[in-house]
Length: 107
Image: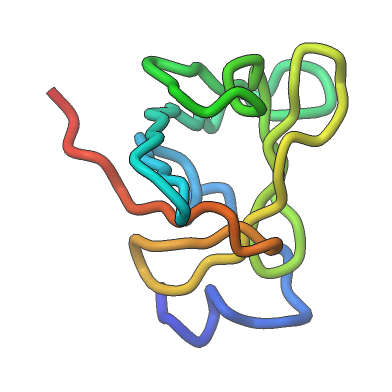
């Protein structure tokens, strides 16, 4: 996997590039959220599990889907909770600039 492929503005993000454990941080404070994104599909979307979360809008995340250049988190009400663009091999940011993320250590 290459950084150019991840950042492609015209390519749907690959599941294998996004799946895994992520740590998200609010850019304006100390709020954090650990979310596991699974490759397993459940209906239309891939499963997601919130492990710990201080960020209100992300607490109800239950699924995710690849989008062009990144991924979108989906809440229990089937509404989007945030769109993210991949910025590196193990980093991403919210399209609105409110969150940044990186791969989390698994333990």
